[in-house]
Image 1 (cartoon, rainbow, N blue to C red):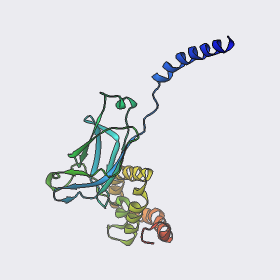
Image 2: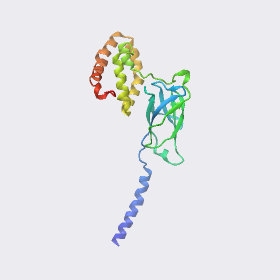
Image 3: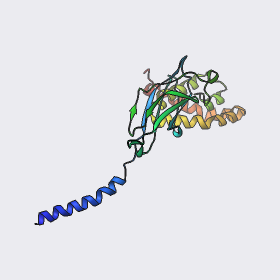
Image 4: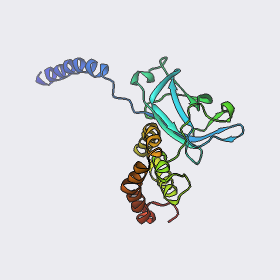
Amino acid sequence: MVGALGLLLALVLLVGILPAYAQEMPPAVPHYFAGTVSTSNGPVPEGTVVQALLDGVEIEEAKTYVTVQSTYELVVPGEYSYQIEGNEKTVSFNVGGVQASQTAIWQSGGIDDDFDLTVSSLPDGSPLDFLPFDCFAATAAYGTDTTGEINILREFRDVVLLASEPGSAFVSLYYQVSPPMADVISQRDFLRTAVRVGFIDPIVALLDWSHALWSETD
């Protein structure tokens, strides 16, 4: 009798608890995409913006830039309800403002690490929404983009920063905020010297000293 009452009580509690959990869906894990980016004429230029959209709506967080190897990687956040049958969301991509040929169904926790994007061409041979993947502040400080110091900064960017999601996010933020600063630096000799000697040179010296630790060639 006691066992039967205990079983009945457990069933009552279970029936009362399950609906509450059913209404609280677990948080969604972003859908990861990575691959190459190209046009019918060849690779897409370094720095071309790749933007993901969900059902035609741009997702601000799902934005990245083509690397020097003509590759990209980004994560597309979404809602758990997107997984419900009949309520799926389609992921599409814009490359330099041009819609790519490929689309996908958004999946929580989905991993597409060989998802190559192609566009027929880019307007006038160059991207619409383009940020040249260059070291703006360093170029302004040195007065040229061909110095050895800038080359080691580019190498660290490509080998270390762009190899991780936080690093890629930092690079994306840098290329959004640094051009205005570079314009100011390039127009004032004392600022160029101050930035070069007090900021860029110490970073370059540290990267040069630790080159063997992070370089792909060592």
